[in-house]
Image 1 (spheres, one colour):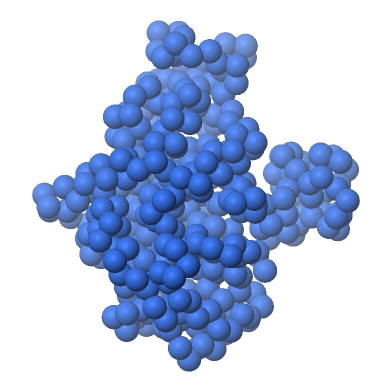
Image 2 (image 1 turned 60 degrees about the vertical axis):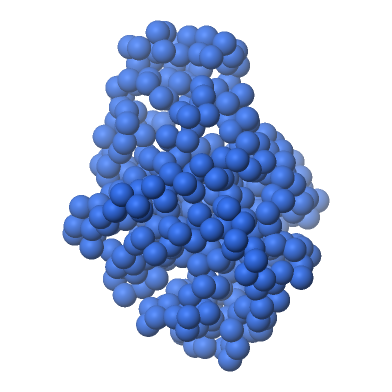
Length: 391
């Protein structure tokens, strides 16, 4: 059984090749047609429990300003909100943008049998990225004290069940590696409260470029670019870098002031909105803030199956007076590893659950697009990206 036809919301079936139960998205083992058959055609189904930013960033799609050109969009995935399309089947359906032929026909000399990146291709490239992460922490580099594991139903009571810090020891020599150093330089460039505009100095803008430059030297990002290049998503490395800078560092407004947020700030640095922590999905940021006494680790609801780094932890914590109910993060990963996987999922599965494979274990990442404003020819910013933890 590899389809959810007539199986929506059935109980877990250990004999099935894939699942259609209500928790399969969290476990990353849904059949490929689950979202199509069981979340759109079965509206009566009970929604999965979600981290708070899922509902916050699931913005109305009708606010999106649809593009009318194929520039920068050749063979992107079908998006029903677009006025015209640039995928491999638009000619068949007669809904191509007017410049499709001139911009996308024989684009970069590749053949285009499909506009979609398959689940198997995503899992294959995620394994390659996993193996390529030579900058990750080794076992002896981090001593973690995860302490108390609680049930998801207990996360709302905001109790501190762990008297000791999460990180007992981190080998800070890791932070002298070029990509770590460039990443850490970015973390103090933001105001965490939404509603306060971000205004970057020339130095801070240069730090964004330096980070992208350093990560593009790594095997991790070279694997990702090679994959996307051969998928016809980018014609050159510079085009890829420019798009990464826009989707991650481009500013938009979550609050009342223009340009108060970005995908990078939200996911890696963290924000505070309406009295709650949103985003903040990075272990390096967590460690540095915990070391300064600004983060108080409360508990966790999920600890990944990996016996080496990177691992995954979904935790509860207080960030200088504000609570994070469910915060999932890789532990011991390099900055380029996280950046690559989140970028992969946003490009290949924007606004959806993206099923990866890391060291033979399944893992799901959820992304959301920012739909109130766009860049370029209607391309979307990253609203959030995080690991979908299970318990």
